Image (tube, rainbow, N blue to C red; front, side, top):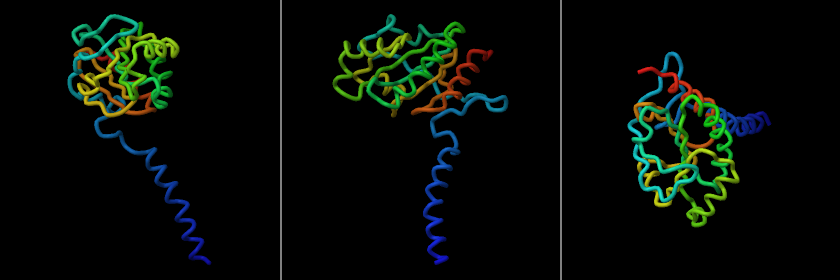
Length: 189
């Protein structure tokens, strides 16, 4: 009887321990940790060009050279992705919070389905979702590949020198994204 109780307890506790460990795990490979006084943001390489987009909404096409000297937040997303839709309010809030401080936010809409390749559909959803920052359609995955992206959504924060200094895939870490933007807006050369 005691052996069965111990076995049952072990079977119950293993999944709980696993889930707890996953919540406490370190920053994923390829992602930047949030800045702190003792841990500045790492340099993850140059921001690639935004070439290959098929159409822009909420503004004219942007090139990397247009963004020189600016802090930039790029979000790769698509309008039918549940994770993207869950993250979008936080991305919009960060974009709005720091716009007057000089943050430029760009949405890269990379489709998961054929319907998401239709410009009218994207335009309608961008408007319905209240996205006010520029959004580029990336139907051919050109920008996706340039960033070596792998997931929806993904967020990249780029410094004034055009260097990627923070990257996060998936939902969450909104406070870290905010902290990275804030740190780069106040960073001196």
